[in-house]
Length: 404
Ligand code: F6P
Picture (cartoon, protein in one colour):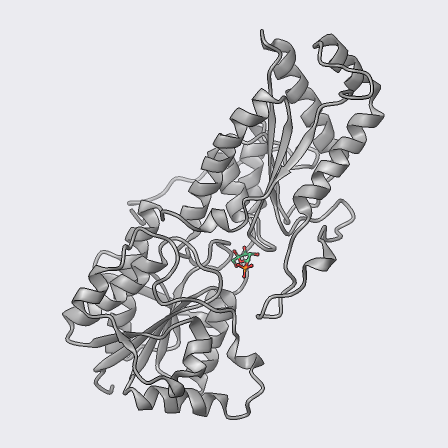
């Protein structure tokens, strides 16, 4: 085990809540162990170009003091550059030269599946590094910093949208990031009492969704003494229709990881619902019964799409993510000092720093449909016929494992 004197911290992929806590935790743990910590700026782009830097920013006491761990985003900056895609045959040599130039012995790399896979490549090419899981998509095998912050923000946007939705008697479909996993849409939707949650794991049957919209939305307005009501749908961006085809605006292009940019699911949901409303005679009867109907101008309720986009992953990070981020950031340095490289941090359980095989950790995890089932049974529409909730029962022997 070689002695570590200087490390670099690098954050990569989409930013999110808790990343600054990771950066801060890394720098503070390093300082406490007498190790110097430097920011490798703008993700793997910065790492690849390290050799061209004149100087690096040292995250010493005063510099770290300027970082607000509770703010989302990363003081180290991000890019979506994947080393594997760089067409330079000596890219790993160049990276190692850059690290040598600044005597950087090892790296703490925080990112999602793509960034984690680059960490694996770097490790295989002889770079000492560890992976700290980060992604608002929550689709890794471990908890990833950013997930809880995003869930809280989605929930707060849904709450906010209810006031305008109810004032205008509109159905609102809020499309959220998450790529092909519906974790943050699912959890954010549940946290805000959304009426329907549409996730990539469940191809949507729009007739089922429409039936639920019609029932709850019209009931609310008819029961209201001022004829007011709304219906909130949280739509995950990587949605599929009943045939299993992706609902995506093909014109949105690709990002620099080479992934298709996902957009258009919320708009599609609005179109499908509006189409059904217009074809449904009972809907115009409802408009008449609630004194909203105006010939040619207002014959069916409006269905509107809202896309908060990057707002779901910025602003204030959740308390959970700041706690988690600081702990895994600090723990990553402990792993490096111990000479444990090429792995993914899981969490810190008291004195135990838990980690796992990185190639396994970055395998995509989807929403557990059994978990959906309990909420579906309690009335949330997931755009499919309700499946019977059939729980099994199990007694835990000893104390259940908990993070907090
Ligand atoms: O991977 C995180 C994420 O927020 C995805 O949920 C989303 O599709 C993507 O990043 C958006 O990325 P960008 O900010 O590069 O457009």
